[in-house]
Amino acid sequence: MKVTIIGLGYVGITTAAGLSEIGHDVVGYDIDSSKVKTLKKGTSPIFEPGLDELLKNNIQRKRLDFTTSAEEAIHHGDIIFICTGTPSREDGSADLTQVEGAAKTVAKYINGYKLIVEKSTVPVKTAQWIERTMKLYLKKKVDFEVASNPEFLKEGDAIRDFLKPDRIVIGVGSKRAERLLRELYKPIKAPIVVTDINTAEIIKHASNAFLAMKISFINMISDLCEATGADVELVAKAMGMDKRIGKQFLRAGIGYGGSCFPKDVKALYYVGKQYGLNFELLKNVHEINESRIDVLMEHLKNALWNLKDKNIVIWGLSFKPNTDDIREAPSLKVVKRILDEGGKLTLYDPVAMDNMKKVYPENHPYIVYARDMYDAVKDKEALVILTEWDVFKQADLQKVKELMLTPIIVDGRNIYKPRKVRRMGFEYYPMGRP
Ligand SMILES: NC(=O)c1ccc[n+]([C@@H]2O[C@H](COP(=O)([O-])OP(=O)(O)OC[C@H]3O[C@@H](n4cnc5c(N)ncnc54)[C@H](O)[C@@H]3O)[C@@H](O)[C@H]2O)c1
Image (cartoon, rainbow, N blue to C red):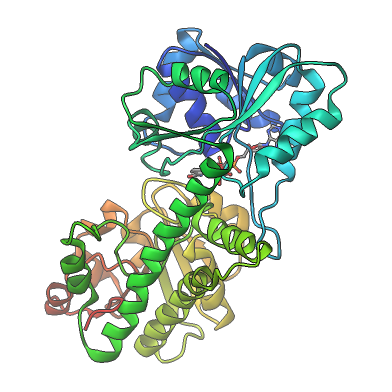
């Protein structure tokens, strides 16, 4: 089938690569011409394991191409996916201007029946706005439909999640739209849940808010564990063994970040408020998450007394392992707080340092970017861990101890066994553990 993808971010690129991989003829379009240029060469502008290979293979097979021509892109696909960003506005509501921009582009160049599918995470009733925008800006009488097909991929596992999802949700207003989307996803073996459009939009928002709630719940319990000398890791382990609860997203620590959970929790809270509903639960989820930074900073100050002129190293800048994405990453807040308190920072991450340099440039007077994780810890007074990369889990801690000026670890991700690291001579500050 002929497919067009509008918006080539984490979701758009993965969708383009995934749909071409299962045999469709895909064209990707973005207003950012530098991204398109990079993608045309078969290189991904984002770090995502396996993505480069998929792009190269499918470009070679002539099933995948990228363009900066909106006209060419819109003419190509019978199905057009909108994968543009939906960031937060100041008041927490979703900023849908990129989605509106995409709809206007489709309206301008549409040349025959198209199924316009929103893949971006959007508040309920956004499809109705897309339809209205299309009608307002259409210059000729052309048949089209809007459907919802939310994306559930996780960065770092995006390709696997796309090709082997737990379920595919399609929200449609007609049998024709359902038939088209069923055919599109035929090669993927996964249950398909067909709903109306509003329901599909809510499914995605509710799923993300629920996962964020699980994380904040265990972090709330983590505070109780810290206050009473209990161990949140054991609480979470035993809770997670209950099949009704499940162990995923039940890890205490520095909290959730990324481009989805923070904005989606806020956006759903806003939607609830719009309808006069009590969605205070989501406000608490957000507040508990924000307070993680205070907890970690308290640990750091308990360890170092004052931060002024202290040499502190951070391992892990991305919001989670296996991605270079630092959007809403806890590292951004922790770096700011340490600098505000007069600390000097050395930063290390296996892949996210280039993105961090766009926020804190290399010539920053109080920040050094380290070449490798062991160089980073040399002569430092505390090591702060903010991302659970495998390389940090498997670090040679004996070497780390010898290199550091004072062997202090503040672990925002609980990646080490407290007894073991303390036996090695570290002062170790995990989250919610005695
Ligand atoms: N990142 C994830 O893990 C993830 C997972 C599931 C769902 N989502 C949702 O998918 C959507 C996209 O997320 P993302 O992380 O890929 O966003 P992103 O910000 O990385 O990418 C958005 C892209 O859209 C482009 N764009 C903006 N306006 C455009 C227009 N009018 N025409 C063409 N291109 C335009 C931008 O240049 C950018 O390249 C969001 O709604 C997000 O919540 C994201």
